[in-house]
Image 1 (cartoon, rainbow, N blue to C red):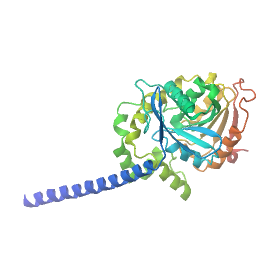
Image 2: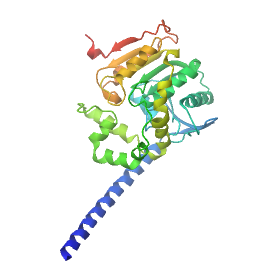
Image 3: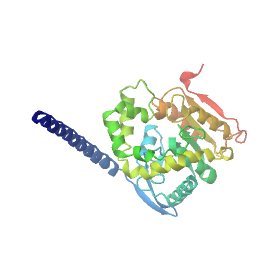
Image 4: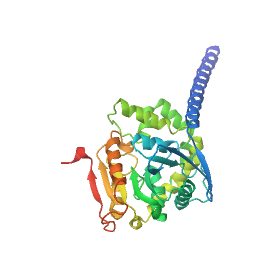
Amino acid sequence: MGLRRSLVVTLVGVVSVGISLLLVRYRKDLRAARRRLAQVDRRIIQTDWGEVEYAEQGVGEPVLVLHSIFHGCDGGPSSGRDLGLDHRSIAPSRFGYLGSDVPEGATPADQADALAALLDALGISDIDVIGISAGATSALQFALRHPDRVKHLAVLVGNLPGNPMATVQPSWARLVDRQLPIWAIKTYFPAAMARMAGVPRSFPMNDDEARFVREFIESMFPITPRLRGVFFDVFVSNAAVNDCNLEAIRVPTLIVHTKDDPLASHDASERAAERIPGARFVSLETGGHLMLGQAKLVHDELMDFFAGPLIETGLTSGVPDTLEDPAART
């Protein structure tokens, strides 16, 4: 009995030490994430939809960057930087993310109107728009509700109608989409976390790409102040994209997607391009949801697109131009 008691005491001690070390590391990582977020120049405006937070970076022609899930205004400027955009990136935190409110009963249409209010406050009459991943719903609604404010619309690896993720998630997602579980996966199962971020299984990353993936994942933290936005996406916004009347979009539109994206559907993006009058579709062979290794190609496509006419020839034709990754061309 004495030996058994000693083993139990030892086991409890080992477990306690392990938990203590885990919590020490968790708190250290969380402090670092909060310091990183505190370095972002985040600004707030008051609107009829509550507070709208945004950040800016760069100079030149403005571009509105609508971030993906688990990000915020801190991720938008960096997205513009990673794509090499020589623009003034204006990145709002969408509803519920970081310092932006989420009104009771909010819809993606409300989000579009709040974006228009932000542009009013900044004195911007019209602007190029980029919707990334889950930010696609807001971008499409903005083009539908405020077409006079959109010079060009680009959707990158977007959540579009028919995408498997464009559904209302089960209620248990509230338990999984939390800071501690995701931090534990990131810390102790980095390969699994990379796949959750959209890196295809067995994707051959070089050192720069591996560093980009680590930085992208770290930029999701701290997660807790983003949770209202995450829940708005997974329970409202992502599914609402299926109700977007794509045929009614009357702004020049570019859709870019990778064939090996494990999170959002390449086929859904291609079908969306076919529905939007005059849309251009760029299909990339590889890169996953983060478009790894495709930054220059995407940059060049965006720069050519933004430099193009505001009203494209054949806009009412409904027949998209399909461009392929040069590596895939014959």
